Length: 427
Image (cartoon, rainbow, N blue to C red):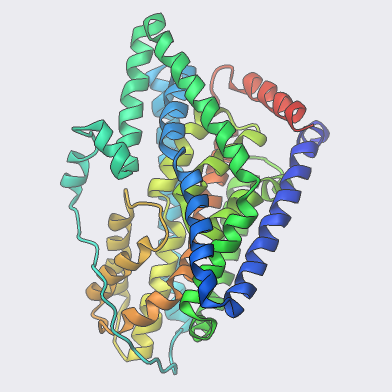
């Protein structure tokens, strides 16, 4: 334990400094958004857009190259299946538990009862359902380049796995391509590290624009449900991700974990984008000594299918608006809504406001009046920001736990060497 604390001392110090800077950016952004004059909105929008583009431009090269190199490093198809299968087991298990909470808690608390809301119409296009057979059919991309362009993370993951397994089969013949992937991966990490220095400014502008556009009064009108929702997020993060997964399964220090992941968590909250946070999440797992063979698969897979907090968010909002509008919604219907949300979330883009279209589809299933969309849109970013933050922490918790539960040949030695190298770099 003492050795672990010494190894992480330098990286934790830097993580704390960066996290404080990001937190200050979030707070100042929220305050500034209230008083910001309209003529400054294009400026904050420009800076926010440039920041998000700087992060997102390296997502898919980083995911693809890191995963290919990781599969090659694992050394066998069987071990690759072990990593992917265990990550999938973690995410499915936590999603089922989150769905259970979402099914019981909001109904038990009877949130939204006695609340009167003024509904406004909003032009929202609901997400269409894709059956399971079509989802499986679309896993293998007919045009991999189109998958990169459209940002279809599931197809990119499958394509990378196929290429990685082919490299395993080819052996030394694939070394030139693997060297290229390693170089691209290092370039992506270097660029992300540079972007990290402007993250406080980026989240400041993102949140300032959000508060200014929606209006603080409108956001605070749903204070009751938002407070309960965020308390639920916090308890879920600490008890499920922290105590059960990180401490219980991973035998990893909770203090070290939460300090190290703060930059990724705060960036996820500020941008409401799990995809844009992927490069920062990867850096956090590197600092915690998670082998690349694990994090290169578990993180992008989690960003794609780990929607624990979204299940909680949707159930809370559906029950709130049902009670506020007098629409009956029994447990059986709520279970259907949560199941539908799970199917909709698979492969959904981890970008800001993607939950709006999902909520439009789910509210229609629940039989809620269309007028609630205007109210939901006004608070979506605040609710979705917390959900994104929770989901990203879940991805990181899974990766840390798998460092212990998914033991790979030679992974521990390589992990220790990587941690020592990272410490020297930070110093």
